[in-house]
Length: 114
Length: 110
Image (cartoon, rainbow over all chains, first blue to last red; front, side):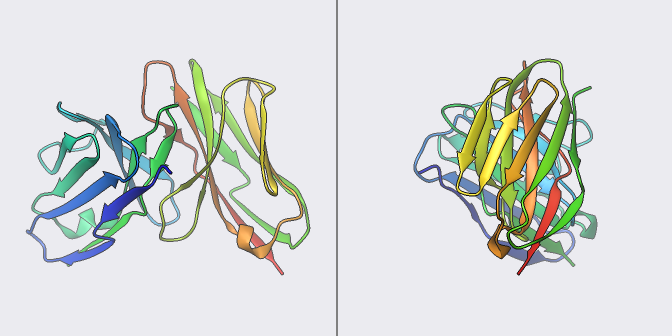
């Protein structure tokens, strides 16, 4: 149990385009999901907390207009990187909060912006 | 400000050579300490949650312990497949998100 999927696993796009990443909890419902960003050999940096049916809560320094988060159902949250630029290239990971407040992570999405 | 510090940054062991990873924390109100394993290019895999000082949990060759200031992840007789980055994270009062340490990169050589 407690499986979280992400799609796509890898995406390469041109500068200026928008990219949508999906995060799904496959066998449990999650009212709260989280989006992280990870640079090579560094730890996870929380970007935002995604709440089902309400607006996401963004961490300080994260542009909400650039990283659009939608949590439309209890099993799906999406992160859209708008007008992507090379500096947005990174490994994006989502997690879903379980019954006992543990977080189960997705496999991550490698974004490369050319 | 809540802080989580992991040591060492990197650890190289011979197969069968037991050791411990450390996670020290300074937080306002601990609601849980979590250990994860992360393989390169993948998301973190949940290992343990510890809630109170004195608590211990085991899974195969791994054992996690917790005191009021730190947690240890003991690895007994490690195998090469235990090679990964081990992440420690805390959840504190009033905050749903986890705060992560920088991780320990473990390499177990055959």
